[in-house]
Length: 604
Image (tube, rainbow, N blue to C red; front, side, top):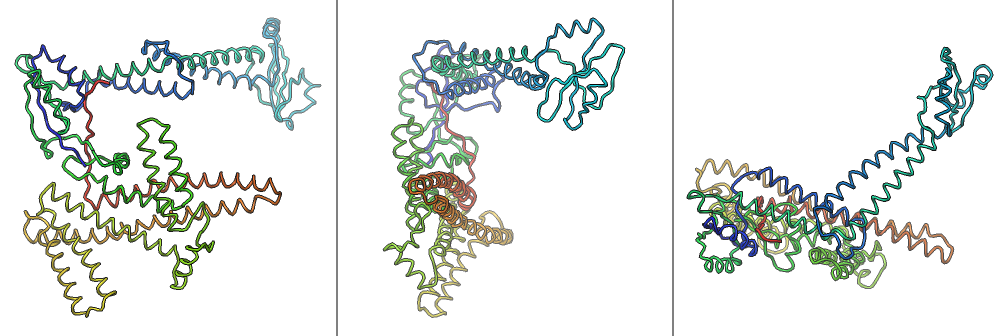
């Protein structure tokens, strides 16, 4: 349900305006209307700063350090210190990475004295460094030239050649750039860099223990400054800037306290109903406890426009059923519902709705597991348990099985949601444009439901064919009238017929494709059950025959296997019903979306 809004226009004397902004910030009910398409560069910079502070807080929180009594009060200093340390750490990490590469290059040569090399150079003697594979190295070089092997590493030989300045020997080996520093010196710098990095890590831990609250306060301060500046930026100045005018949206049920304040302070204001056709009215959803848990799913796609139906309470039961259909395991359902209820008592208030959503999905998974006869991958129909054994015998006697029934059930549920979506589309079009513009949709509802009635009459009753044909002709006549002749009240009949033909082509191909999309419910349910069965088989076959060890191995395989299956199948069960909701259901319900979230100006 979308809560009704009221548009307020405030006219305030410039001397009282700053106090007025403070007061409406305290009330926290006015969503200020933005007059400009883009915010100023200064506000954009502050918004970026808020994001950076948030990133810094998350960086410190991820360190897992217990937050102690706050001893750091200047959030700006904490923020700047963390950023400086992060830059310093990144620079030292890059230096360490470069140094370690250099060490790996120098280590095969061992240690040496730079001073000795310099003295030799002064005497006109230089060392040239070579490396080659052990296969290519010719030991005769040691007798023909002043060659000395320094080391052997990873199939390569490292050696030096001693030359005078006027000599130039050529060997079939790769010459290495002259070494500038010995490995001992490089390792000293490596340890120093590692020690510096450890010190920075300790500083981060200290800041995480004592400075997060200061950062949160700093973020609030910057955010409030930003919000105040946005309000000032969207204020009109009239009468030589003596009168300040600002407009905003207020939910109708929250207007009472605002009106009392305005009357008390004698603030001049105008109040009006919104014009959804010409104004971008913000949307505030309010649903009952069950549907409220599914609002977060709808917001992943888009909020409804102010003047259309909120589809949350209508897709919520279907989404819950579809999730259970896809996962469909009694054991998984019990596990999900239990974990959700236990976790709900221990987590933050903001996440309680998430846990309740998981609980509902777990309940659905449990019941569909009962229908499909699956318990942690065990096929209950094959166990010959009292109820499942009787059902299995009953279905076999009629040449069918549970999988065939689940396939049919997926199509039935899909058909129900499509028809239900068309009903909602009819209501939506009636609300937004008037009932005359919704007659085409009503014609399709008559055709689909009437066609279903004719099918039932012809196959499951003893009515004569003539009577059934009369019903069929009535259905075709009424639906054809609405689809081809009355689909738009402002067009002539020939344009309506052409539009009706095009609409018929789109509906026939679209509805058929949409219906087939619901087969994925059955396919995902089968794949989940098969994966569970496979892991059970692996646990039995790979456990061995040693009494205690076999049980331990079996339990480990079952835990790992079913964890993987629950994660993979749960992810698919979350995504694919969402796709059916956002694509098939939203399309058939005529959902347009694009609504703006209600975001009142308030003090944090």
